[in-house]
Amino acid sequence: MIKYPNGLTYNSKEKKNKKSNIEISFSSANRGMNLEEDINFSNEYYKEKDICVITKRPTPINIVKVDYSKGAKIIDAYFEKQSTTDYNGVYKGKYIDFEAKNTKNKTSFPLSNITKHQIEHLKLVNKHGGISFFIIQFESLDKIFLLDSKFVIEQYEHGERKSIPLDTFFKFGFEIKRGFNPRLYYIDAIDEAYFEQ
Image 1: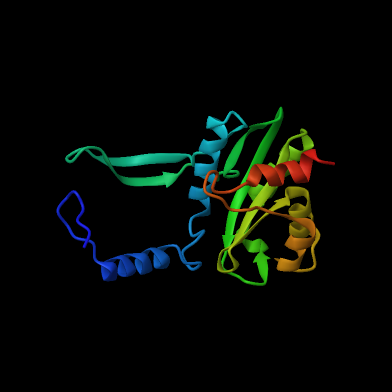
Image 2: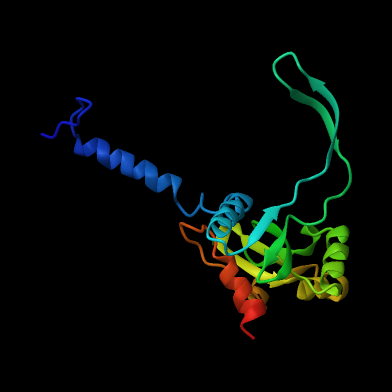
């Protein structure tokens, strides 16, 4: 019998139960549920390692009413204007701008998930020499891809389909690998897509 410093004894059955709970919380069903959080943690890692500076763009909100009775709680607010894309920053001296999207679809990415103003914004970024792309996660497949915005814009404006098939991501996109730190190796995908040509 093993006793811990807190006086509790070791129980092999408890360990098995705890292990099974851990396996449940990290099962493939729960992995990648929050793409934005994974990108944010990765951005912190890249910033700390002085690799790049990429930040989440805040959504402009107009606050109408605040309740100050218990601190400052926003009671009523609305989006001031349509936001552009989720992230922007600088990497290797180039302006970077991208949108992160999720889909539960297993066979394609619906273009209806992208708004017209995002397309217009990314067209301007490309016109002025920036690097722009989409990071798209297929949640049920646990796959994440970087897909150049020029390709997505072409599909959005002139494509015959209302979605981009999964096999297109394997053919024209760059798969983003998962890790611990960073959670997403999306800088490797940027290197492969834009700097190793």
